[in-house]
Every structure is written in C-alpha cells, then in structure tokens.
Length: 278
Image 1 (spheres, rainbow, N blue to C red):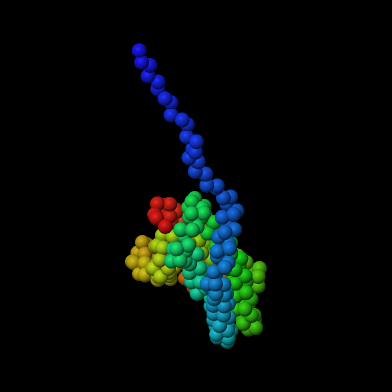
Image 2: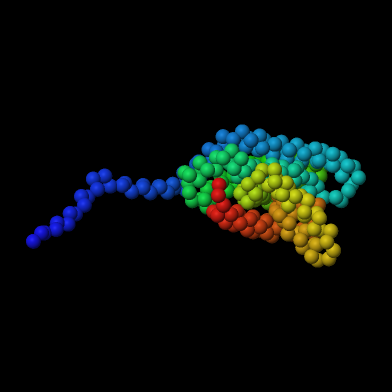
C-alpha cells in the first residue's frame, strides 16, 4: 500500500506588509498649513494693501468733496452714507482674495499635494474659510475704523461730523470687519465651485454689484424683494452708518441673510469639492 503524503506549503517567509494607515492631521495643523500658504503668497499682501488704500482713500476723497457742499447749503442730507463709502470698492479686494485662496491652488496644481496630505476635503475647505475669514475680519475692522476717522475729519471740520456714540457708527465699524470676513468666505466657496479665477471673479462681481441693481428693475414686490436679498445689497448694509437706499433690509437682518447665502454656497462647494477630481 502506498501512502500519499499531503505536503503543507511552507509559510511565506516574507509576508506582505500591511499598508500603513494615513495619520489624520489635527485640525489646528491644517489651519497652520493654510495660514502658511495664504501668508506666503505675494498676491495676499498686495490685495490686502489695495483693500485698505482703496477703502480709506476713496472714503476720504468722497467726504472731502461732499463736506463743504453739504455744510454751505445747509442741506439736510445725512453724512452717514459717506463716512464709509470707500468700503463699497474695497469689498472687491476681499472677494478676490477669497477666490484666489481657492483657485490659485488649482492653477498651480498645488491642490493635489494638499489633498494628498489631507484627504479630508471638508477639513481643507473649513481651514481655508477660517484662516481667510480671520484675516479679513481684522483687516476689515481696521480699514473701517481708519476710513471713518479719515472721512469724518472733513465733516467735523465743517461742524457736521459724527461721534463714535452716534447711532450706527460703532455697528458699521464692527460690521465692516464682519462683512469683509464673510465676503471672503463667499469668495472661497465660489472659487471652489468654479475652479477658475477669471470666471469666479466675473461671477462674484456680477452678484455683488451688477445683478442687485438689475433685479430691482423687475416691477412690483418681486423686484423689490430680490433687490433686498441679493448678496451685495443684503450684506453691505451692516458696514454702513446709513445707506443711500433706505429700502434695503435692516443692517443685522441683511447681514444674517448674507451669512445664510454664504453658508448655502459653502455647502454646495463642499459637496462638489468632495466629489470632483482635483
């Protein structure tokens, strides 16, 4: 009788090593990385400088030209709409800076490196928003304060200036920082959605400046409410002592609407960011 021996295969002497799990970076490290990226890009400093110079310079110019005329004619025209007037144009820089924080990584290809290091795309988007919003909150507050002091100087010289404790003044100065911060986050979200700098800037400026005026031409209550709810009209009122257009939403109500619109756009950006290839 022949006995058949079943040979048991020898165990693998060189087992395949399990792929190491990628460590999850703490959110504070992701914040630090985004801060370094934004801080070291030269366009950041130039854009912030432009924001301050344009806002303060145009506010001072507008107040200088208006103060003498209002005082000489004994006009009952309020001076509140003028003392932060330059922020109307400074907001372009805040929007562009937010867009560049997102789209510059796509144009350079750096986004692939970022996502390789931090696969959690929601954390990347959140960190970008927090860092940029914090920068613009501080710069916006300083800009609004400086603009008010510079512009109000010309009205005070004519005896018609505003005091810090006058209604709406402190709210507008603080609101300048808040509005610029949320507007920058709006730009980040728009940049993530479009992934193209020129296109995102064009759409963003249209939404903030152009479309609000156009929808106001629609007759009846529909046009009136669309005009009130457009992002630029709703958000900017919090950064003005008084508005030239008295039919807009109350400052804090309008700002809350703008925050909601920004949150909605940010949610769309997060969804697309998580599903699209880099």
